[in-house]
Image (cartoon, rainbow, N blue to C red; front, side, top):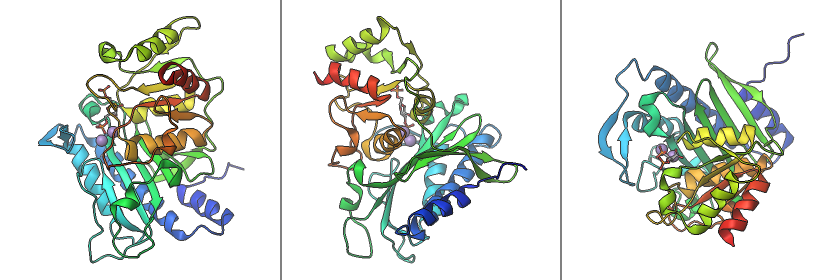
Amino acid sequence: MEKAVVTLNRFIIEEERKHPAATGDFTSILHDIALAAKLISRAVNKAGLIDILGGTGDENVHGERVQKLDEYANQVIFNALDHGGRLCLMASEESAEPIPIPKQFPKGDYVLLYDPLDGSSNIDANVSIGTIFSVHHRRDPRHGDGAIEDLLQPGTRQVAAGYVLYGSSTMLVYTTGMGVHGFTLDNSIGEFLLSHPMIRIPKPGKRIYSVNEAYSDRWSAEQRKLVERLKGKGRFSLRYIGSLVADFHRTLLYGGLFMYPADSSAPNGKLRLLYEVSPLSMVCEQAGGAATDGQRRILDIVPEELHQRVPIYIGNQEYVELANECIGG
Ligand code: AHG
Ligand code: MN
Ligand code: MN
């Protein structure tokens, strides 16, 4: 008898049954995220064939060149989730301000924060890119439109977090706090199928460190000491793709330590807390790993503003603890 094919929808429904308190809301949100992922995957896979490569000529709130696929992915996610009646507010890396739900649609009790396309500078070179998402329950008990305090919540309060990796295959990896599960898109039937149930970061993890060493002249002495330590006895090897989702996915499946440290020109590093670092930190902890800013647990950090950046050390617990010893003193 062939092994049962478990689609994402079947898996979510079975998970929902295990938790009577779970409402259909989250099922619907994840279903809509999966639809957006399929549409973005189709565009990414055809990017070379249709005029969707390259920059729009615009810059985003971070002063970064916006790629056409960034804009496309941003719009696809908004359009997939703006009408379902489960969200009361959204926030995107590509939008300076929170994104309200259009007034003609009902409002729900969740908020969605997302990086629509991560690693977009790699698009033209056909390197893996991704989407990252984070879901919180609204804090404000009022109904109707959400407010900024519904977005500025610590990672410990996420109800779900995950990412999509558009690589040699398209994978959706997410957690709702009951383990991490990976689904691979079968394009022939347009379904995400359960391919990596209950992902656990390997222990001991591979001795891989992942950081952009080009900036080492701007690092603190502690950061330089940490990397020298990793090159010393029991030498680690270096892998750095430059797409956070791809670098993180490798760290999750093989083990290792990914770092985007603070440096003299970026005192809080480059990666954004709410829609890059916090969701991946929840996934990593749920898989048995750890994530800090060199001192504090990422998920405990209370955000102060929407696009706040934070240094990140994420991967095997033992490697993150080594980083904390060097960085945190
Ligand atoms: P995004 O494309 O969403 O702006 O993210 C890019 C990020 C992240 O994907 C990656 O880890 C990092 O930029 C690479 O930065 P450097 O080129 O400075 O190493
Ligand atoms: Mn990103
Ligand atoms: Mn992005």
